[in-house]
Image 1 (cartoon, rainbow over the protein chains, first blue to last red):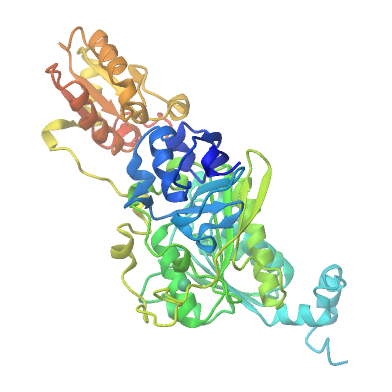
Image 2: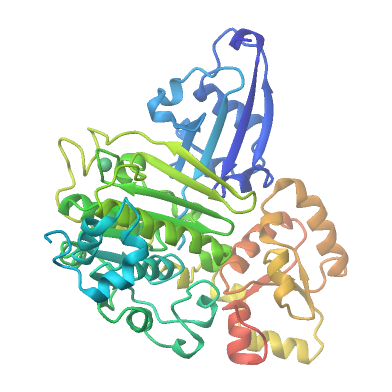
Length: 103
Length: 403
Ligand SMILES: [Zn+2]
């Protein structure tokens, strides 16, 4: 399957980011077919419209994730993969981690 | 015998089980004895971290903490005992550590780490452990470690989750490489508000000690350029790969703009002790004191008292007259109609006043603002209880539990 046929993804939230998603940490999602490839940038918009339950500003700021959230794709820092431009593959695991500060 | 020239017979007997581990050996044990580690925070992470460092025979450790031991620390900060409630945490921790190992030196720093003192303290140690509980201190320690070339073993924990990384080591990133901008203050939770299961920072703190020991021994396999995520609710550890040091990083990059410590409270928009700080959203005319509320209740005045804390907090203790509508529910547009209906039915069509209450009097103010919007066309009077349940205990009923 390629972006053109739609994509299946496992999207995860942790470190408290799940609170914005009805406290659900794991979401298996199917992205619809698209002529333009699915990038993380496009995924963020889709998440905002389809998964986010409340307070969008606590998740997205300036068309990216808000400061303090780290994005991982298949257990790798998104910085290593091109950040917002990374083209998602079928069965990718995308994880959004809110940094913890407590001790 | 060159290798063990620094180890006494007592050391050999005491650390023998560790010395015979090939990764340590006599050379490694000598190194540990000559090493020093700074632990910032003698709390849920700092207690287990320092305990295992002292157990392992680190020659000198320093502990920085400006807090006093409180009863609500005891479930996770296990160097402190019931007898040390009210004592300085650094003193209580140092005493406990010296009981464990009297040969080692423990330096106590009873002050709040800031730009004026951090570099002087950090420079005296080989490795720094970030066991702090707030964003401003995390940036401060990061910059101090980069500027003085020290590896930083950073841990954090909240509720059922923990995170662990080694910054500024082996070409790995620093905290700023990962997080150039601080998180908005309203997105940050602390243990005092969100809670933490004691064993979770216990696990992370012990791992921090382990990473510090590996760094001191010069071993590979440390958590630089990696992040260890611990989800206690699923019993899962995840080890994820992080970026390398960022050449454009403002502190550890090639052309740093931060060459000395800055004002971290200003940078983060929050200070190390924000957890105790009250906010003021409402005018005094929209607030009443706990004593005034007590008088109203006593004289059987009709009122609706809404407790806006989470359900599990309401379960801990609540005033008998109160009903629970968590603020998180008020914030969700989908509950607006339901809440409006409930208020209508409990205020006899808005003819009796509404009061909101929470733990300390912050969320109750936010709730008044939210309810004023939700019920704006109903003309109902809404005020909050200043100082919340803490003030109720302090000024009305000392038998009411405090948490
Ligand atoms: Zn950096």
